[in-house]
Amino acid sequence: MSEAYKVVWPRGRQVTTGARLAKRLDSLEGKVVAQLWDWVFKGDKMYDVWEEELTKRYPGIKFISWREFGEIHGANEHQVLAELPAKLKEYGVDAVICGVGC
Image 1 (cartoon, rainbow, N blue to C red):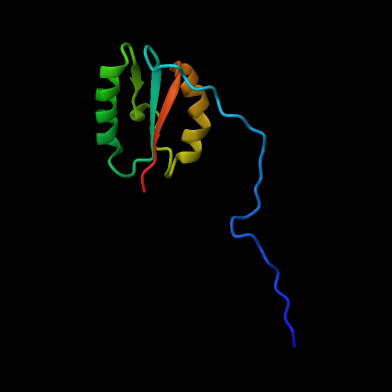
Image 2: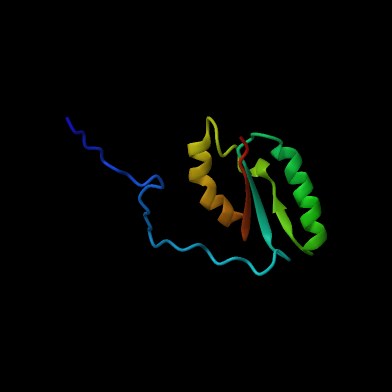
């Protein structure tokens, strides 16, 4: 008895939405950068390092701490993420560093 098997491409079907990415900033000089974190793996230490190094390279850069936004992955994540657009606008954020650990 012969058997028939359906053959599938291992990479899966490619789907494009036509969505475009936002234009990249030319520089971080004088920009406001928000820090978002899921409270996993040393983000508290890493943001201190990134802030110190980026301040040396980009005069006038300003950071809005991850502490201002709350945990983006956890018990309150739905509320935190729902409030995020308004908070980014409130702080005049130009860019975001989003730290997600595993």
